[in-house]
Length: 231
Image (cartoon, rainbow, N blue to C red; front, side, top):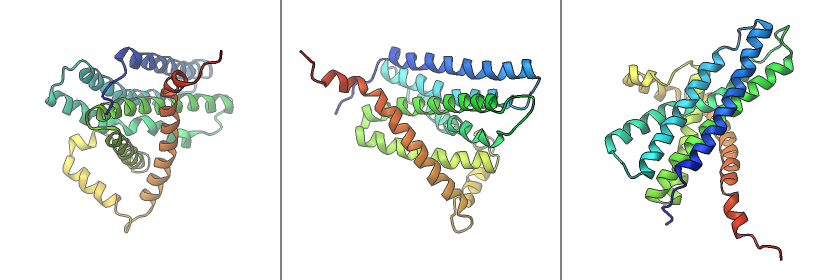
């Protein structure tokens, strides 16, 4: 089993790229507000902030494991925080439901702005999942790492349904855990309503394919290192 983790410096390089993506997204939105006086999509900034929470939590968790400064209680709290807020990253994709013509703002401008926020949220989520998956892989093995990743993608897809259609928030679990869990059990029952399962399966498939693409990109350097060199 390969227990080696990538360096924290490499992880920070991805974080800096995502900071740039966040800056671009917010700049487009602020230009929209200043130039057109349209405030409709201001909530995108808040949704992007929520998407950053699991990314930061995963980076802290990863850094602790990489530096071997593991404190079980602190790591457990960070892992719970990551788990609760992980669905917020991909949730931004579903904000496409708000896209419509809003003169005088060009339709294409709003489309590009939404795509900028959506891709940033997705990549924040996939980076955070990759870092936590690497921690699980280093401790328990590759197959456990992938089982963890698939489980998180499935659960986050269901969480996105709860947020988009039932308007639940990540912190509802902290405010009223028992009533929230009872509500989740009712919503997750396909005999009552099949739509949550349908949405979760479809979004999980979409997320898995996107994550596999991102994951394959992270390993391109390994393939090129092993490729035969031309004379």
